[in-house]
Amino acid sequence: MSAEFLKVEGLSKSFAAPRGGPPLVVFDEVNFAIGKGEFVCIIGHSGCGKSTILNILAGLDDASAGVVVMAGREIAGPSLDRGVVFQGHALMPWLTAKKNVAFAVKSRWPDAGKTRIDEICQRYLDLVGLTGAEHKKPAELSGGMKQRVGIARAFAIEPKMLLLDEPFGALDALTRGVIQDELLKICAATHQTVFMITHDVDEAMLLADKIMLMSNGPHARIAEIVQNTLPRNRSRHTIHKDPQYYPIRNHLIDFLVSRSKDFTDQPPEDYDPRHPPLVTPGLTTASALPETLISPRAAPRPVVVSMRN
Amino acid sequence: MLRSGRLAAALLSCLLFALFVAGWHVATLPGGGGQAADSEYAKLVGAAAASGQKSAMPSPKDVALKLWEHAKDPFYVRGTNDQGIGIQISYSIGRVLLGFGLAALVAIPLGFLIGMSPLLYRAFDPFIQVLKPISPLAWMPLALFTIKDSATSSIFVIFICSLWPMLINTAFGVSAVRREWLNVARTLEVSALRKAFQVVLPAAAPTIMTGMRISVGIAWLVIVAAEMLVGGTGIGYFVWNEWNNLSISNILSAILLIGLVGMLLDQILARLARAVTYPE
Image (cartoon, rainbow over all chains, first blue to last red; front, side):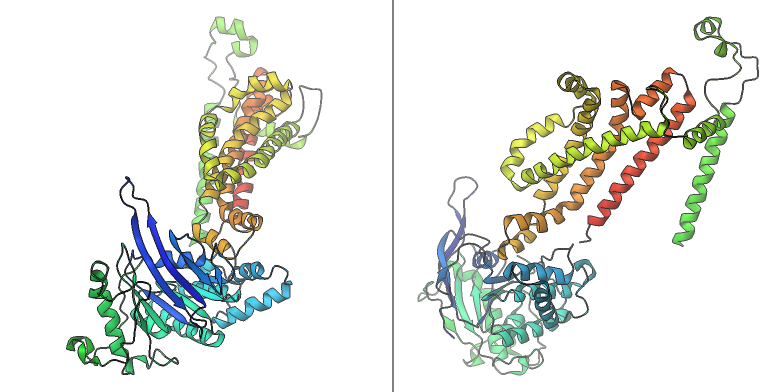
């Protein structure tokens, strides 16, 4: 793992105030790096600019300041190197599932023959478990299936990096679990580098190697980066039995519930936004946390901090 | 359930039609003989009306016979002022399709451009807003003066009245294409041309088709009036000619035919619109 695959330096986004006042700074001094093959989640409250960061990485939005460098090259505009899974699946309703994927595949390999394109589409639709639904239009698919088509479309172009904008936000818990498992499997098989926005702490812990915590906006920052020290072959069924599970989960929730608010106004004295601290709550002893938060009998429930951006 | 509902509706339609014909029949029964026509009116219009025996308003039977007569031989030509109703309506349909087609050729590409560019949208908007509410027939004198040909002028009038709904709907449909589909195309580095034809066009197609459907309806309304003005050929001219002949049966036959052809044109475009509509 090289820590230099994607580098974000001094990123900020601000909007001009409507009546000549000082500009509204959504976030500034955002610095982080993602290594090749790493799965990184970003968690924060609505309005801290998570989606904007993702859009800047995708090349769909411009930063007010700062640079993003991927594989040694600065990101300027959208590119086939970065596949995006959109929040609202963004499938074209007049095309079948397969043709939606084919639209992307044709963009990636314009000279590929018909059978070759069909082959690639089929492979990725099979991969996300949509065998048999290839010729259905999005309106005939359930929410979970639509999101799978979106994932297949993003994977099919074999991007160097995958950007997921809260892809499971609109799905019910059961469907979400199944697709999370599938995503985990595919990422493990393809060693895909992933940047994902989520509001779901459990989802982040299941999927991510690193979880970036953002403080509240305006002037949002990356407060700290939590290293997910749970072993990488995580599964939904056993993850909550790991002794590290509750310390990490409590740390994340503690940040979201209380610390994220104060962080922007009163950051810790030794905080340097250029080098957000990398913490490993799973490895530190859990005794420092309040008793109520670590009750081992409490069933793990997905904690959804806020529904939408 | 659905089928029996449809059957009931069809039966009710037939009943309404029968009632209408019966009412019409009763209303046009020959008068009781006692109605003496006004003497001055009799002097003006001649013997037929003076007798007061029979109104010029035809009975359903007269109209049915007239329709049968037209149906038997719709395409005869016996001089410039006596041509079959089929020929006349073909002239009208031809003009509508030509004017409408030309309008589509202009409106859809132009609407596409206007819809793609917010700058053009704002720049064109005042012109569209002023030109749109002008009655197409108001253009007629200007057309006759500049084009100097009555047949072409009526095509121009059809062109100008079909233009606006198509232009406005195309521009609106194109500008309202969902941001996320455009973002998908952007992240896939899709070329502008491919984006226009494979993303924007299918996305806006239902709105464009709605505009075309409105346009063809207006064009069909306008052609009758335009042909009454310019004369020569066409179903509008036929109606006016038969009015001068005071042949109400012919006028009623023409009215029925105008309605049927209008419905047909609308249905064709509705069918096309359904073909390009996508469920969300």
